[in-house]
Length: 144
Image (cartoon, rainbow, N blue to C red):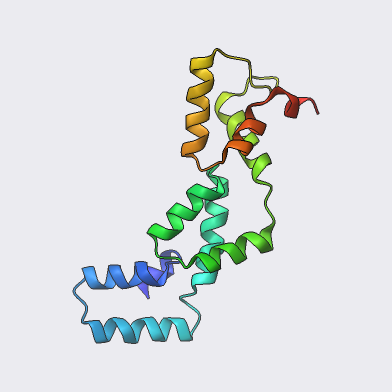
C-alpha cells in the first residue's frame, strides 16, 4: 500500500516492484487482489493518468502507447481513455513544436532543409505521425 500511496501503478508495475522486494508469489497475488477489490489498483485510472501525463510532456499518441506497453497497460484501457478525452493531436503537435522552436511572436521560423529534417525527427521521437508533424511545422497553421 505504501507504493500505491505515492502514485498510481499498473498491475504489472506493482507485481514487479513486489517481486523485487522478494515477496512470495502467493502474497503478491493476495495483495493485488486486495488492492483491486478496494479500487486502490485500477489499470483504467492508471491509463487515464498516463495519457494526461504524456500530453503534458508534449508526447504524441504513438509515444504514449509505447510508454503504456512498457508499463504493462492493456491498450484497450488507453484507447478508452483517449476516446473519452477527445484530444486534438494536431494541436498538441503544434504546441510541442512551438515550445521547442517558436519565436517570441508565436511563429516557427523557416529554416533550411537540414534543420527542418532535425525538427521532423524530434517530433517523430515525441510520438507524432507525419500528418501531425507536417501540420505542426507548416506556416499555414499559424495564421490565426
